[in-house]
Image (cartoon, rainbow, N blue to C red; front, side):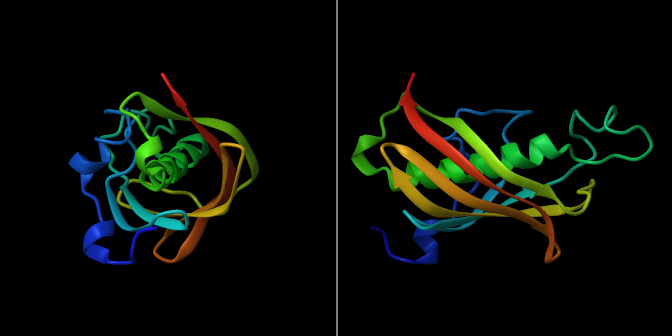
Amino acid sequence: MSTDNAADSSMDVTQIMKYLPHRYPFLLVDRVLELVPHQRIVALKNISMNEPQFPGHFPNHPVMPGVLMIEALAQAAGLLAFKSGGDEIGPNMVVYFVGIDAARFKRPVVPGDQLRMEATVLRITRGIWKFAVKGTVEGQLACEAELMCTLKEL
């Protein structure tokens, strides 16, 4: 298990891309602020009007779709799983959803917001990771869920 040293746990987007296969427009994690392997991650997603979903969701009232908030939280949780996996994680590994439970959306997320994403490991059983995740904007809860994921080789 790694230490809590913040210098070891933060990641910029170029480091994030070494772990996640997603690319524009589907890479939804801009920065990792804190990562404690096997425990938790705190990451950021900056919401910009330039994102491709906003012309259609919704015209004249842009709102980040809930499914993209869940995807962003899943990507953050995936980073935590990858960074916790150690030598078991190969270059052809990917994180897949297994389940999404108790998803709730509490406030709209709009261009100009910064979504602060937190994922905490609840348990790891037979290769299935279960996370409690939440997204906040300026300290207000925007969304929360429990996500289950597994790592598989491509």
